Length: 135
Image 1: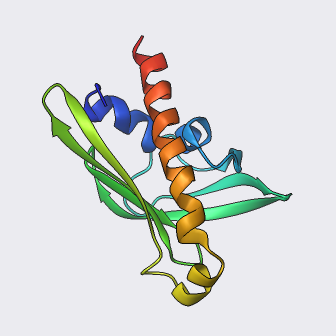
Image 2 (image 1 turned 180 degrees about the horizontal axis):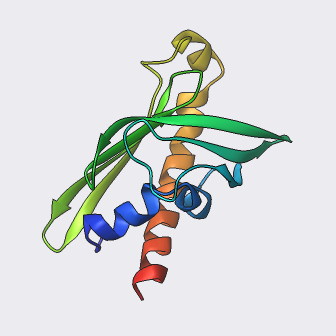
């Protein structure tokens, strides 16, 4: 992306940023949490996948402007890694179910494959959100 890690971080390290960049269209709002996430922060999101529900997550990996990952009670993780490049930043988002309390269930439900399109869509939306804030 043609933006600095700090510009991208302002979106991905914010619960509201998760609403703005969500490519799955399941994140509907912020229920609680700090303005900026850091190691150990907990936050709750308003979600909807057929029916509305709340999802409580905790930041489990953190290196400011480089790495952030959060997990909920299922223990699988959503991770963003930022790597500065010539005048921009490479952003890698991943869904890591290796830390899950039930990785075989996640595989049987098809989540790793189903999340691939959501990850692509989230990165596209993230770039658009950062551009709108920069412009």
